[in-house]
Image (cartoon, rainbow, N blue to C red):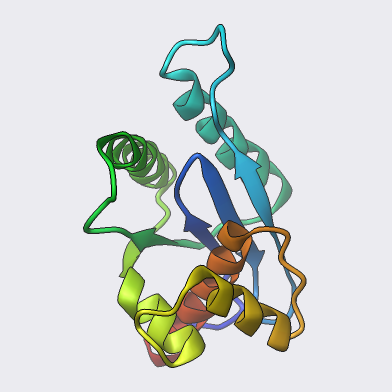
Length: 155
């Protein structure tokens, strides 16, 4: 697979870090999909799907990589993650876009050399590589993006 494929990398959560583009040109940021005070619990998923639509309208998406979390600290986080992953994988299937979950430890190990790296270490590594992430989630999105590119180069 060519490195010129457009990769969408996501750190799923109420604050979603993302990075999209190719090896030569990409952007990153953070989406907040938290529902408002008077919105139903499903609004975060509606907002997430809308963000995916907006991205797809602005940039081609050839493959999606996301952080695959196997253990959550709380029930609420697990429910949010599961819902976002369901929306993402359904959206990918609907549009014929391949997707792959990447283990947290592998993302951290590849990015920092330490599979148990802290959020601060992930952010510091992003800065050392010339990025200016505004949040830990954005730094994770950038790390996922780079691991995705590495996976493409050996495919």
